[in-house]
Length: 74
Image (cartoon, rainbow, N blue to C red; front, side):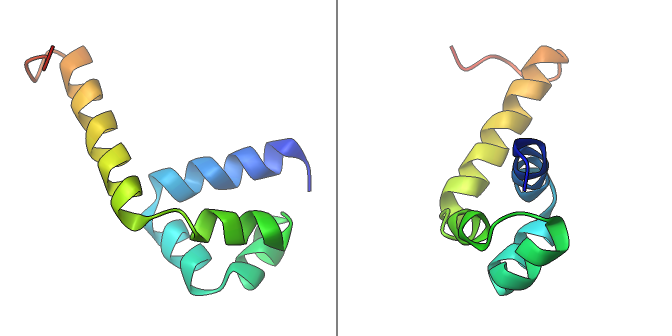
């Protein structure tokens, strides 16, 4: 239940669609499996899927710009 465990689950939730699905399907089971409070897993599950998709697209574009593979929007 440490901060590091919560940060790790948050990062995996954002990065890995399988972990996102696991948390959304059963936050209680996911909390037990990852060693975080149930309230934290429920908080993750409450994040809008549209918001998460938007974040992923934005991050992918930023990474592409930094790699020189996409023009900057600015």
